[in-house]
Image (cartoon, rainbow, N blue to C red; front, side):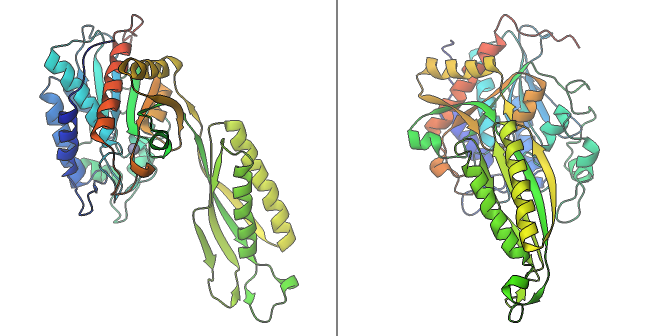
Amino acid sequence: MHNLRIDAERLWDSLMETARIGATAKGGIRRLTLSEEDKAVRDWFKAACEAIGCTVSWDDMGNMYAVYPGKHPDRLPIAMGSHLDTQPTGGKFDGVLGVLAGLEVLRTLHDAGYEPDTPLMLVNWTNEEGARYQPSMMGSAVYAGALTRERCYDQTDGDGVRFEDALEAIGYKGETPAGPETGAPGFAGMFELHIEQGPILEAEDRTIGVVTGIQGMRWYKVFLTGKENHAGTTPMHLRQDAMVGAARLTLAVNEIARSYEGRAVGTVGRIEIRPGSPNVVPGDVFFTVDFRSPDAAILDAMEAGFREVADAVTAEHGLGIDVQKVSDSPPVTFDGAAIDAVRASADSLGYSHREMLSGAGHDAGYAAYVAPTAMIFVPCKDGLSHNELEDATAAHCAAGANVLLQAVLARANAADAAPDTR
Ligand SMILES: [Zn+2]
């Protein structure tokens, strides 16, 4: 345990300073990935890291790496980081806190003239939010080998601008391919500090969430086909009403998730009815299903359960059905030693804490493919995020940054730190 502590006021000042880049009238941030605002905050980040002796580079996905030297430059760094892009009406903390707290950790070490055994690395991952270009977490996914860069490059935004062209336009398309085996900086461990984006820590009045994993998520598109007909003249027993099928399947999604209460959630978040006229029996309905659980076996059972109900309901109402699985993110279990480092740091600093799972996806989930990883959560007001009113206290931000500092130093100074054998 080191006596070093971060400067809470300087951390808050940097959060507020960068919040001006893309500031909205309601107090949030609009800083879409690869926009002019994203370029501005990247330039700010690069200058701030270079001012404390970091070497800053970026790869062909625009992921930025600031390496802070350690006593053994031959060792792979311990990484920190998150993302500086936001939702179109995003808040001041989602992602930004994880990057700026990492910067504050490095500034603290720099001020103290402290050299860790292993180098440290601060990462700004590209397009975590997935608001302008889908899918989300693109930069870390390509780095981890879970997505191809070609697929990402060809994505277009609402104005038809390709991802690769936007990346080139802001000057952050590097030459090194993203990935630990391709010349981009590798790392021996990673910690991501983030606001909880949920209500649990605030409700229990705890300061730190020791995040043990990220729940798995599966998305489906469901297309139901019935028969359009006159709503006044078609007897009930002769209808093939796609909306009735969709209503029953929506209830089934809720019931299936409730049967795993506390271990799973299920949502129908979008529905479209055609032709959508008050006096026509609906012929076509499209809806989405979102199933989440930390347990892959439960996700399998939920999917099987949904398909079983779907077969019965469509047979009963004479409907056609097409269920397409459009995404499948497996559950992530973080590394035991990395989780222990977070818990021990919170303990040593005297912060109340609890273990928890992340309900939302994070870059740390892909970092975990590459090296031992864990996350640190701090409370956010009313559990609100992806909202301009998103808020967190300066004290909680500072607590999270101090846990980050201690956890990173514990790993960077561990005797078993991995040599860079590439
Ligand atoms: Zn985030």
